[in-house]
Picture: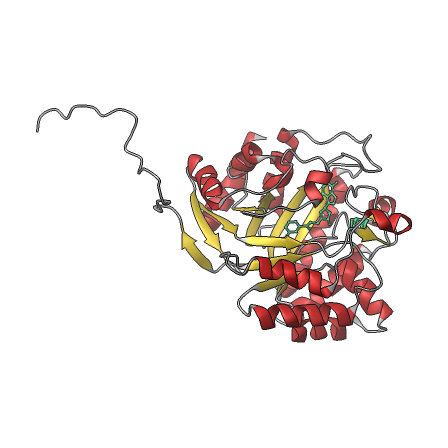
Length: 353
Ligand code: V47
Ligand code: SF4
């Protein structure tokens, strides 16, 4: 374990030194009603219990975007359940209107789960569909919906939604357009190590082909209020080992991200010594997906100052980035308003001067 951690940290420092990236974004979840019934999902309401959930209109979503008009956010991350009214026309119009309202806001939206469903309904192939999304203003794709690619596990936990192969094909079409995306894995439930390796192998092969992935994001399975509540969660040691192995295996990915609302702030700090160079999470905002699945962070929102402190306390350099890893601000020597600069705990008399 410790050698694995040292090797992962070596690769991390070779690629990024002490730089630790974060991004100021906000999430919009258009609906929590979903046609699918993934067994790990604590978030969605079955379509037959539709009245218990929410279904935002285009105007509702644009109003959420407008609420951030005076906030220094650089990205909106849009993802939610799958429903027929959220189709190619709906999302094309949404992306267009977000850009018309705030051209500099990066739209990171939807996963192959939604795209596969929407394109099939519109009788469109993936290449045409992704081109239309790009023309409408989609800037990048988040890494969700990957779960576990191996059909032996995927059929049991995420049956009915796009297959692992289809997930990879949609990312490949997106990369062919010169665009970037992320990749996740949902680990620590009924899969075995061989399934995690198979998952990473397929990602590694596609990355060698396209170079379009930016970040790998291992998502720890949380077991509250879902159909897999009987499955115990992984230990912190296992989580750190998984980050380290991911960093070593996927050395053709530039970044490894820890999603702190899922693993707690302390484990996020530890992960920075096990290969992780990016801590994501909505800053100054909230999202419901993870609190509903049992994460320690019931309202996953942390101020920029808290996040910067968290990174500095473990000796790393906090760097605010945009979605494509352009540097927005280096916070290494930044002093927040009203903050005393650190002068040491004791003021020792200076001798000999
Ligand atoms: O695909 C759902 C996961 C994912 C649970 O690309 C769960 O920057 C754990 O992909 N326990 C969606 N995980 C979120 C996602 C993501 C998050 C942050 C950043 C980015 C990015 C992408 O959430 C789903 C699924 O794998 N998820 N339920 C659960 N009970
Ligand atoms: Fe629907 Fe996504 Fe939940 Fe699966 S994980 S039930 S696709 S919202």
